[in-house]
Image 1: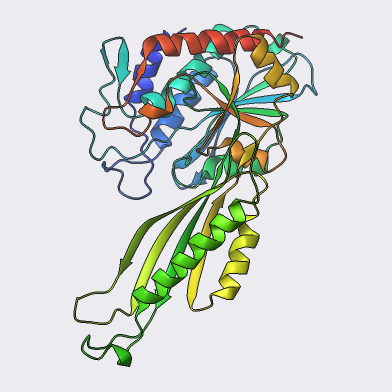
Image 2: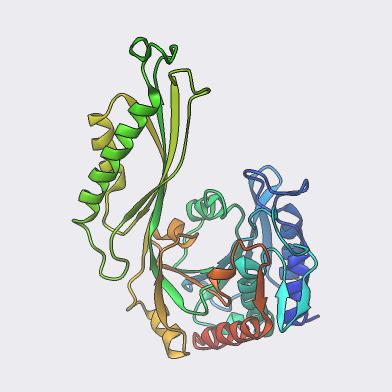
Length: 368
């Protein structure tokens, strides 16, 4: 039984699937319930579906659609199932209210609107998918909002020939984006009375000196590697915490630094060299790689042929998890990234409908 696109979007928004990392703003966080919903929905489209647990109670949803011939290239459609926290929202995050031609709620834009567009196209073409030139897969990926956990797991488990990750890109194919490197810097010193600072070691001063040197070194290194589309890598010192009281020389200082990396910038090598030159502090890094998929790829050309242009983005997403394994990948979906993570998140119904039509036209262009 077919579900209207609007109804499907509302049902997805009404299922809380907040990433449990940090403070989700609700007690029942995680992607387990929406995974169960998607499993039932996809089975109704005659797909072979399984839930693959990545973290306890937090599975990826993996679906493969029947194909008339074995050995076809694999095309994966892959939105993520988690959303960010609902803290601070000014609307009911799970009401999925329809107002002013929009659907309102957490995940409406990021990324249940793009998910609806993908599922809506698959629903409308469910009887024809077996005839396409590609074997069609769908994955509801957990954990994108904190660590890309679901996509990293699936990229290790399965090989695909092309991946389209669901994100609100205004139905433009993001073929390249910056990566992220989140660095935690820790400086440690020795406390003493502030009246005799020479008796202690000021951790804040040590951290500030190192951060200043890091900024200079990064700017110098990033200026040497310019991407023709994305420009240069950037750095932002996001947080700094240290000390306990004004009259105590601080014995600790922690800082967090956000680096956005263009393809070709060896951030691991940069940090290794910098850390060797500054042994007085410790540095830990979490790295999400940048993405580059050749815009001349046949799938991207097929997208362009049905009116879907290419573009770039400063943010990162699940596509990079597949890209780092050598799989061509892009991000694509209706809606605007400007609405993602907002206090009153929404997506225009007309954008979702247009997304369904665009994905449908693209899939039909792959007719064998």
